[in-house]
Length: 259
Image (cartoon, rainbow, N blue to C red; front, side):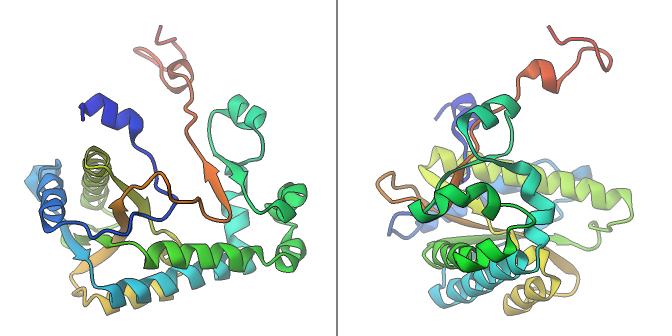
């Protein structure tokens, strides 16, 4: 696949993957390409764990699903992310950002704005929205043939120092490399974010993976081969819109139009 085509076609995989193991050849390719990402002074602060063991994936899936339920039940999810929700084509076409919640059970559709709000806790509980999303999260992760973990060495990842900032930039380059390589291989990729928002759950996964004390687990992604025939989750969204370059950028100084 052409590089520019891969950049445009790259997207987060919200659905299940094909029932097919990721080949050793492709796992090695993902790691090799990631190792060619740029890093400050060629420090290569990353280490990777490719998880294919079904039991380990299942354990992480349960933690991810439980994390989703907990985040919704205590209100943190809504307070932090409500501003990104869009409920119509017109709304997302106007903002050109956020996620368009366009797929959910018919019984929920009349209440979608109430459900996805900070004040919708009782409605969410009535329709079991936290548990629906938690179950979907667990199923998606559990059915993934590959989890890809990125760790950073604490020798570089010092959060209050520039080296920490540089190492995060390097990790961002690794993640973009992974997204482009998976796209070119006919694979999908999704960030497993919910456990990271609950420190105890994140630590449980880190301990489960025997990550040593001089490294910090920073990101987990689920990966697998894409199958367009697979149904979308019970509650799902799209996020293909992009702001125009005139809104995103300037030429020579802030406020001067790029074209």
